[in-house]
Length: 325
Image (cartoon, rainbow, N blue to C red; front, side):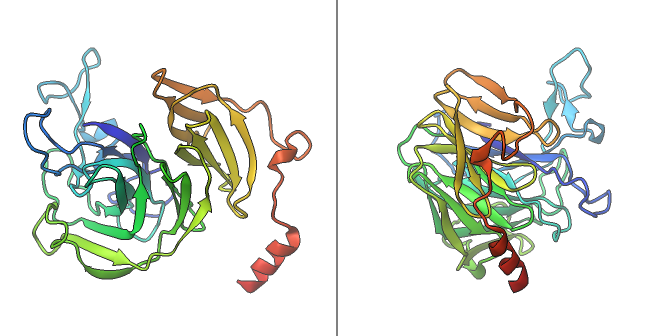
């Protein structure tokens, strides 16, 4: 595994039954064209891998595949895996509440020339669980109109995050210096993907592999210098953007798209970024120093002590918007 991104299902109150709830499952994105350590031609078979973080579910083993003891290294058994995005550099869990198991993840796949790529939606549906290889019930949708560009930049991470209420997927396109806003629930079925993308997880008709078109999208922010990590504030009002080219973290207002503030970090190669739902700390990874860094808030934000964070949306605009709904 050459994991470039990971994302947790953090929806604790989804309303799903206990047997179908995948709260605290997590998926990793693999930038691996599967060359068997450069001994064979790439078979483009890899894709996102799903894990269960609950140690009570028989998913931790030792090197021999037996139950893991406290005094030895432990390894996760994967709960599921799909195979349609081998050169993936970004992944985000979708907090939607409509599917049966809550295992929808969006990915930035750069397969092909490893520079340009497209958006892919994965629904593992019912995870097969540790030890199984059944991939026949999943649904994978490709969005070739949603072109993303890694380019020649030394970037192996592209941030993605889905807003839980406005249903917008925010995606970094690093070389273009753009953050796209994509309607997560938009797009229409166009055709099967099996002919144009002949490497896929399962041949049974229960495995959906489709191409979707007419997805709604717009540029949320541009003129960024090598953007990488993305994270939403816990109240969903602000989007934090790691700008690797300037060592800064920029803060945008979700509602207006306005740049509210920015802060210098002193770290020159920021990759993934997340905000803790418990402590409200910003965490990011710096590839140059190989460090995980935490940024602690100095205090509660207000218009008095942080005037740059004042909303750019007027009350009258919000009132008219509410009336229009």
